[in-house]
Amino acid sequence: MHIEIPGKPPLELQNLLLDMNGTLALDGRIPVSVRKRLQEISSTLKIYLLTADTFGTAQTETAALPLEFVSVGESGYLDKLEFLRKLGRKHTAAIGNGFNDHLMIKEAALGIAVLGLEGTHLLTILNADIVVSKIEDGLDLLLHPRRITATLRT
Image (cartoon, rainbow, N blue to C red; front, top):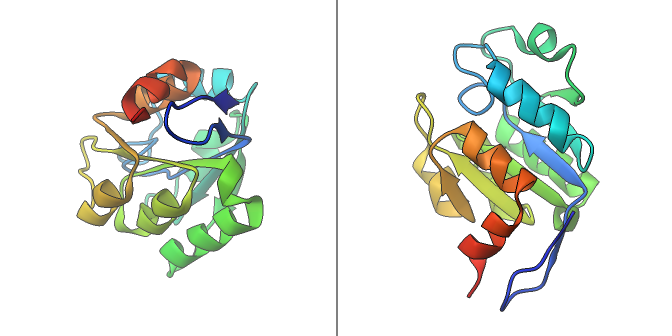
């Protein structure tokens, strides 16, 4: 996915890293509206779900979705950052809401913080390129990349 941003180098995205709870899901459940968007995005980006799986529902909730499930441990924020670095930060967007997302949000080529019903850690907000009120809005940015251009242009 090529995104032109006046005054900045263009983004060349290949990957999308997602957090599960508070980002994609509420109380461990992924809404139908999010599932549909993930199906669309998967034709453009390789999607990875990085989660500590607080509610124990991630594998069942994502079984039919076009994404790769990646379990993170107790030091989830470092695991997520390491995974981002292995993929290549310059070609990766990240979306999250929690403390354990703040470093991947900061280092990703495009970092999006989701406010959502669960709330968002302050460091994640401060490290994001864009903050959205709900996950559907964040995914819609990737489906309509000129919205990213409009928000990030200098």
